[in-house]
Each structure stands twice: as structure tokens, then as C-alpha cells.
Image (cartoon, rainbow, N blue to C red; front, side, top):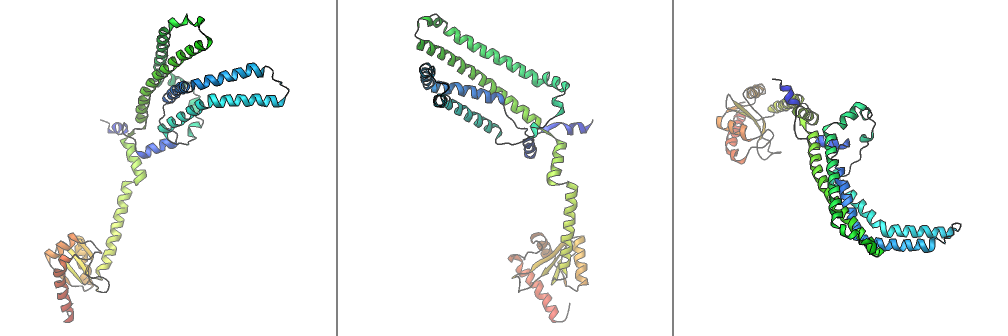
Length: 358
């Protein structure tokens, strides 16, 4: 069984670093279908809300054209300025609210999906984009087939909406010839709006389904193999072997510094074979004795060898040595619970020194 094949399968979720790299390359998740459907749906809603105002402004503008523009002196600069001013006013009153609303919805929808991203990498030229073979692969790929199915569903959905709405109002079509112009326009606008709002609702549902499918495809494309996770871990945290070597060197340096402090100790307390703890006491700097060095087995032997070489007293106290080794770190003062036991040892050492013994 080839275990390498399993390590290359993308079974792991993308890490934050992988997502950030994809984002920097412009590879972000965004559904154009959802944006388009939202804009279409919002557009019809805004037309419904501002419809009366739009019709009123349109009637006023057409009246202005029929009455004033016909008699416009095209060679008069002031007349031309007045005409363009009326055009701007018409656009501002009738179309600006719809345009601003659509812009706001488009910006919000896009920001909610991808946030704020600036990347020029998607614009960089790529040879595969002009490769005919790659083009055929994209057309006849799974993605191309799904796009075809989606387009067919949208066409059928919109066609169904158009048919049902027209069938609903078919009895009114024969009566339009006898209606006033305003009533005919109102009825036509109502039918068009109903078709538009229902069709955009259908497209919005299709876009929502497509959104979740696209999201799943995007997440799948970002998935990583176990080997990729290991490589990323090495890049971020460093090679484990190198880190292990660094920690080993650091331990050796710390142990070397610790061994240098053994020579400053007042006493070395031993187990006697397993543990050795070097204690030093300077009343001018610390209120209690400090553990200058400690070790077990080979390190303990090394501490005792240095103590013998430096004429530092070695005292055997199994319980005290074991307790100091397990509870006090190098450089820390002993706890109050050990004051009496350590004080007895130090008093004994100091008494030997006063009598001339080392």
C-alpha cells in the first residue's frame, strides 16, 4: 500500500494562513449570481416605491419637451443650457434614488461576501487563458455543465412566471382599447412589475442555492493534504529537527551556566545517588537560601564532582534533597516550609567552618 498517496489527498480544512494567501492572490469566495439577483430584486422594489414619483417626473419632462423643446433655439447657448439643466433635474429626481439604492446594495452585498480586498494577480496574463484546449476543458467540465443546467433552470423559471402572470391578466388585454391612457399605462406597469418581482424572486432562490454550492466548492478547493499541513507548520514554526536541536543547545548552555554557579554554593545536599541540589545564601541580597543548581543521576554526579573540586561541603539528606529537586526551580528561593530543615544544614556547615573544617 502506497501511504504517500494518502498523505497527498486533500482531507484537511484550510488553515488561516492558507486562506490569507488565497485572499492575497484574489482567490476569494463571491457569488456573482447572488449579487445580480439581489440587484434585480432591489431594482424592482425601488421602482415600486418610487414609481409614482418617477411617473410624475416623466410626465412633467415629456410636457416640457412637447411645449418648450419644440420651440428651442438651438443656436442660443442659454436655451441649450436650460434644456440640459431640465435633463439633469429629471435624472436626479427620477433615476438617482434608484441608482444610489442599487449602488448601495451592490457594495454591501459584495463587501459581506469578500470584505475589502485589493489584488492585481487575477489581472495578470496567463497563457492557459488563451489555450484552446484549456478553453474546451472549461466548457465541457463539471463546472461548465452546472452552468448550463443553471441557465436552463433560470430560463424555465422566468418563462413560467411570465406565462402565469400574463394568463392571470389575459382578460384585461381586450379591455385596454377602451381604457384611458393613464389606466393602460398603470395596468401595463403593474403587470411588468409583477413579472419582474416574481422573476427576480425565482432568480434569488436559484442564486441562494448556487451560493451554497459555490461556497462548498471554494472550501473544497482550499482543502489541504497532510503533507501540505506539515510543510506549512515547518514554514511557520520552523523545522522540528532544527527546533529540537536549538532547544538542546539552549539546555546545554543553561546547564553550563548552572554548573558555573555550583562554585558559589555554600552546601550541596544529596540523595546521595539520584539527586544533588546546590544551595547558596547571602543575607545581603536574599532573605532565604537560593537553589543555584540541581540535577539528577549524571548531572547530580557532575554537581558533586564540582563541589569536591571547589571544597564545597556535601551533606546527605535524602528527603530534603528530593523535596528541593522536585519543588524549587534553579534561581528560586526555598519555600518557608523548608526553612527549618535547610537552616539546620547551614548551621551545621557554618559550625564546621568556625572550627576550621571544610
